[in-house]
Amino acid sequence: MGEECMLEKQLVEESIRQSGLPCHALRDLLSIGVCPRCIFRLFGVHGDVYSCLSLSSSLLWSVLDLSNGHEEATDCKVHEGSSSPQDLKVGPEFCVVCWGILQLSYDEQAQQTFDLVASTAQLVKGEGFEIDSFSLEVSVPPIILGNERSVWLYMKKRYGSESRFQDKFFSGSISVKDALRFSITKSLEEMLAVKVAVRSFHIRFTYTHSDASSKISLVQGSRTDGHKKQKRGDKELLEGIDASDLEINKESFGLDIAEQDRIFQVPPAKVNQPCKVTTLCYRTPVYVGGRYLKVRVKNLKEVGVDAWTILQQGEAEKQKQYAALVWISRSLEDEDLKCMSSIKEMDIIQRTPIRVLHRRSPLERKRMIHWMRAERIHGSKQFFILHLCTQAGTYIKEFVHGDLGRTHPNLGSILGCRAEILQLDVTDVKMDCFNS
Amino acid sequence: MTDAAVPPPSPTLEEDSEVELRRLLLPDPNLLILSPPPSAVDSNYVHYFIADFLKPGHDQYIYRHANGLCVIGLAPTHASLSEGGVTSVDFNVGKSDRSEIKVTGKRKKNAQLLEPNSALCKVYASDNIYIARCCIKGSLLEVNNRLIKEPGLLNSSPNIGISKFRRVNVQHKGDWRLCELEFLISIRALSSVLISNLS
Image (cartoon, rainbow over the protein chains, first blue to last red):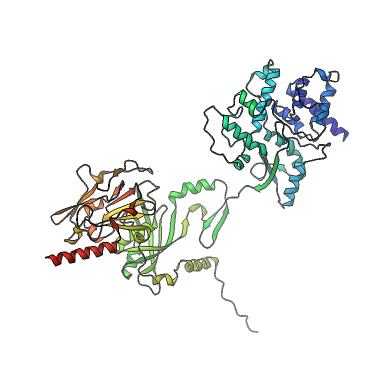
């Protein structure tokens, strides 16, 4: 335990150096309520520090105190009204930027622990998933970006003379999602005994916060930069939205400084509760291709995601086979059966059927009837089953009844009488790639 | 020692599916009692008729599809159909040739907006010229240009239709001139009886 502690402390010290921030600036950030992981990620720190289990505000305080043992507390530019190091150890304090998302460590004072890793591992095992890899997805309330900007404006106000604060925003900062992944991936890999990989078993963490939607509506109310107004006014909708869903300027939400202060406060206001997280496990869909008949599926084959593209490309080349229940206005004769059977590769011209003309272009479509076969039905002279194989995209109903003469030739014109269709079923779809 | 009876070879999967398919495809015999079945035109369109549109004897129909498109045509009681039939159809109605319209695209660009009184085409029947009108306000999408070459279709196929329209307003229910086919036939019968009484 002691060695681990030492290693972690060394990592923290290294990260402090990487951030390039002086100790008093770090103390400043801690005192306004930014958690260590947020501090490190906003200043572009990389490394294993995120996954240190004991990384907490109190740890960072103690490291800072140790490294600057001689510096007195009064020298630090501590923000008025913020909590002192002693206050931090009393009661739960949630990071003003990530609202608790990256505060994974055990809070001794509050006797609370929300061990994300352990509960996730339990969920996976409890659901009975057998996995050989997993991937993490994270969804966070976009309002966190507003909190980040508030921190930036605060730092700019106090340390504006330094060159790093001349830019508009943190350069090289790491997102909350990535930081969370850095923090828990190794532990999860150990607990689940598998590694992270793409295109596999997904674990999705969705973070929500009750204040998020009210803040977002405040933001939308005051945006003046002429962006398209979001039409979503539904509160429940907003709570579940991820940062990538909203088309807003990532760094500033389009707010000027006065509005930023009004809505988020500079430095950002504290929250009373942390974000709530919902964990969801699912697998990516498996694509299966096969021949679909009404009755059963034949020739099942597993195909890749490309199957959809192939299907779409091959649509024009498909042949489809149908069976239709047809009625004609006179008796069906043997000559009719012969006539229909003799039709091979017949071209027909179809104008866009009236029943779809309101939403399709008026076009004349040339289609091909490959073959036809009529089958008598016992006990009926005027009803029969028509089997036919046509080019994909043929309107069969219109071929039978003629659509007021707009499909020509049609079954009625071929037989010289009126024809109606009562029932239509697809019996086969001929696509070469699924023929085994 | 008797040989055990050899069971017949069980049908292959292929045959099984064929049998089941046939069972699904064959219609319910009760369905076949409905003879003749309603036509596609009967089931999908609401039929409206207008008697004596602007002139006596000019009976026309409007078949309105559920999607709002209408087919305009000569009613079976139209005067042109009785005297030996239609001999010629001309879509050139003075201002423009209705058969020259080219409507393109899903939004139906270039569709001409016409009024109920606008002329659709001229129908020639044994020395008489009849003008078929739109009867409704709407955009003309298409005319049946087969009638140019085969005007006899108007005589043989009652539902061949003259043109397809997209309705602009939907106030047809209040139009006192629109009526059902049976009514149209009955008042025609009535008027011919009246005429014969007068002569």
